[in-house]
Image (cartoon, rainbow over all chains, first blue to last red; front, top):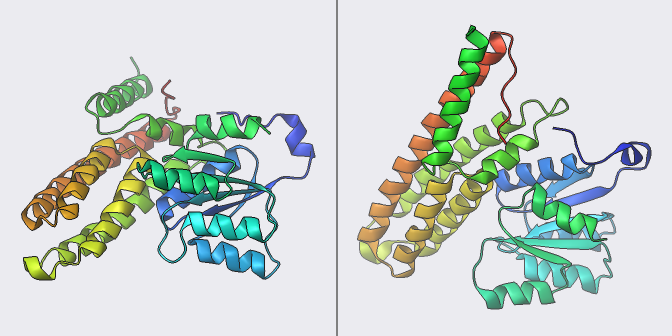
Length: 131
Length: 154
């Protein structure tokens, strides 16, 4: 199936994205989704890793997609920390959690969008188009 | 009807049955959309990783639930089931995912008997969908070997 990129993206610099999720299956699928939209993708396993990366000055992504529940540092804490470090890129949260309070806290932490898992082409397209 | 058409028809009928029986949901179709010339083995890679990951999780769950009622580490059970729910949901293995939802009710209530029942159910559903997906991939290989293209479902 043809990617929705069009010829404009192929000539421009590719945007970079970071996927943060402790589930390897979700990581590979989200990577595939982002590749489909033309992103160069890196992945990390936990919120603590993305915070450490940015604290060390090595984080430079156009988009971050983060899971909510992760073993060491969850997505809520990681997002709060990233925003407090001045990270201004789009951050999308994904979660399978039904608890509305937790989801509210996740949005309030500084997300641009929050989706129920699983993420797919339709959901990602809707928020990438709303730039 | 030549062999390629026959195999393609068989593929479409088989895949349709997996959706009809609730073994797969729309998420699997979304994953198939991501496979293209630059990523020709994407679905196979994702599903293979799901198989490997699932078998580790099932093994860990069996260990966590093999002790007596007083010593079950329900946090460990929660972590495994949560991950299994996430990964099965990500690939569209709908019935596996649904059992994980029921599983949560049992370990939240610290109901060991219920957990053991759910473990058996999730194993049954997992091995069923694994078997079906392996059949699907064999059909794909046969189509390609016969010189045909794998049909794209709408």
